Length: 376
Ligand SMILES: *Cc1c(COP(=O)(O)O)cnc(C)c1O
Image (cartoon, rainbow, N blue to C red; front, side):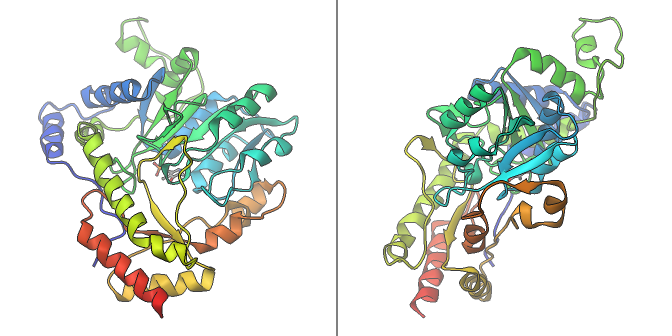
């Protein structure tokens, strides 16, 4: 059986975790958490990185930092994971969904401005498959309308847009280290914060609304409740697991990219024959091979393909029932403009196995089976 995903594991992880356990330092903000934060600050050039318990929580933290009020509006794609919408809806904000571009499956930057009202406060672009949204256009719209930008860069670790790390372009960027992502700590995430002023407040919100971090640095002589907050610190053991992968981040990235390129080369003939569509990477984007997907003709064909692959011991998946057609999305949000591509394209897309350590022979086998399916 070829699994759809296998979480990354690097040999050094067990030793690092053991070190935390032996030193009895497993709580939050220990040495490995600091190492991870610093690694991302250096890698992305962002002002501040804070490791969190998930990308969902990082986005919630960003939503609190945006000071949203009941009835404020947030613009985002409907084709995304629920967390992008939930984080803002939890603050009482209304998710306003905008259509995607069929080429990248990212929010259509040309349709954002029309969705802006006097209640709009935030744009939340999602970098689908680790391929950057049209960020120059999005940042320009945000600037002209005085809006915050919260990047859902859950899938975008190690990806770039015009040489800048995804997640470091907007006011805030959220990464995910869930086990399905390129780098994992089981459950976990990080928030990238551009502005130093926001960084100080983020530290407080993440520490239950207290100035505990300042206390530990000796900047205040007691710590107390100073703001709204929650508990978004991961255990240092999880950070240790992640750090083992960050030390070999390029190796993991190159391994994934080589599988991705292999798929692309092998499936090109089917695309040339217009049987399937392949992913598109805009020239200004450097991606991280988070995902390899193909698009079938329609929903029926996709259902048959997934089941054919399963009969051949290959696990492939689809995802994202567009949020505006889901029960909570209908209750809490609205779709602005026409749904030209969101539903149609989401029904055609299927994700093929892709993980660190996937072998070229396995990619060949999968491509052989897909070719066989379309020969019938
Ligand atoms: C995985 C993912 C999330 C959620 O990440 P968690 O770390 O599991 O909270 C959010 N948004 C997108 C686009 C994702 O792919």
